[in-house]
Length: 251
Image (tube, rainbow, N blue to C red; front, side, top):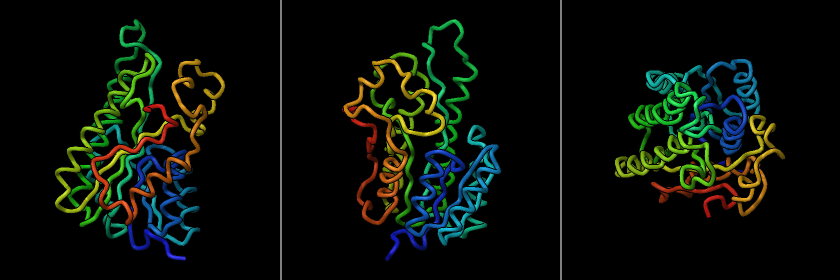
């Protein structure tokens, strides 16, 4: 059985857990060699690497803090040195600090600014670094949020805006890199069934679930499948696009 990504190398940021680990495994199932980045969970990252190598691909874990934009160039350089090339970049690493309105007296402005650094500046820095080494036909895919398009409830302003900025940047990058047949797209994920979301299941305000046409959490595999499609050979004419995998939240 042929695997569509054999011979390709993919970097998945934030790949030591949750959606990132599932994305890495999904790409590896199609033959891609994988690099994952992590911030602090070395044991978890190495466990993911072991699982990826068991699929018959090369896999490495690299410590890199997306909250420090200067880490992007060394991250890409290490992928190139250890795996020889980079064909697919998946920007998955992010934080979601929500729940406070911008006029709340106890809003943590330092945390909000840090969220911008991680979700926006860090992603942009990684895209810039990767763009210099990606070959003809390379792929850049960023994990966004439906909140980047539709603000259905209060308390999400900074997070939503940090994700919306990546949509605009990706559309611009698609124009800049189109001559090299490098595609740049966004998958806007909805609420997902991860360990991070486990505590909120069944406890969300009615307005949150009510804003979805399909009123359930997404399986991480559903989001990873959309990313796999954009990373593969059948998506070469899709660029500057947003694919919503959020149960109709943006409908």
